[in-house]
Every structure is written in C-alpha cells, then in structure tokens.
Image (cartoon, rainbow, N blue to C red; front, side, top):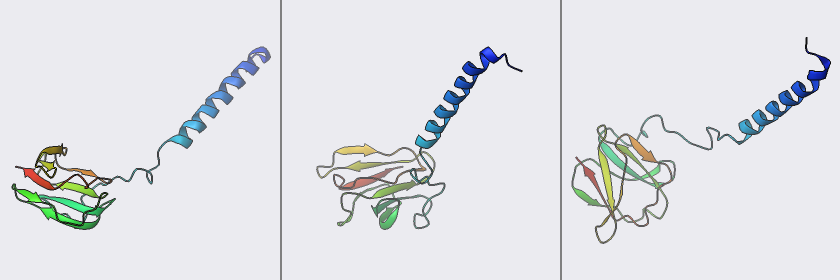
Length: 127
C-alpha cells in the first residue's frame, strides 16, 4: 500500500497519463479518414495503370497496359485518382501539355486516392 503522503502525487500522475492517452486516441486518424486500398479496384486488372475521374477510384477514365506514351482522354477533370497495378516496382510517368515529365509514381503496386489530373496530358508506363 502507498504511503498517504505519496498517494496524491501518484494519483496526479495517473490522472495526467490518462488524460494524455485520451487526447492521443481522440486525435489519431481513423480508418475512415484514411481510406486504404488493400488490393486493386475491381476494374483495374493486373498489369494496368488505371486513371479515375473521381477520388477514391470511382468512375474509370482509362486503363493502359503497354509502354508507349498515351494522351489521357478528355473529361478527366481536375480531381480524380489513380492505381498502378502493373508488375512489381514498375512506375508510370505523367507529362504536361508540353510533354515535360511532371510526376513519376511509386513502383507498383501504388496509388493516389486524391490525384490531380488538371496538369496531366499524357501518361507512360516505364517497362
């Protein structure tokens, strides 16, 4: 049993630790706030790079498998998302209107649920 003189400091320590734990748990991101994709969207087959018109892999806009440069279709808008479902570690490069590379994806599998298509005019899988 604790000495009565030490009981108050120990109690304060426990209350402070409990309060800090409560704050930490209440500010941690939830699974709903950070949508994680454990596998490719159903409409993005293996060995393809897929572009979506809307965030979170909604409304497929295109899917490319080969290694040539493709002009993305009109109507992709400024938001969107993409999923790189090519063979492991394969990247896709994105180019602007002048065909200057502006972004390279991480190696497959990789994705961005909140991409930005506005500056992108072309994509090329680097095989």
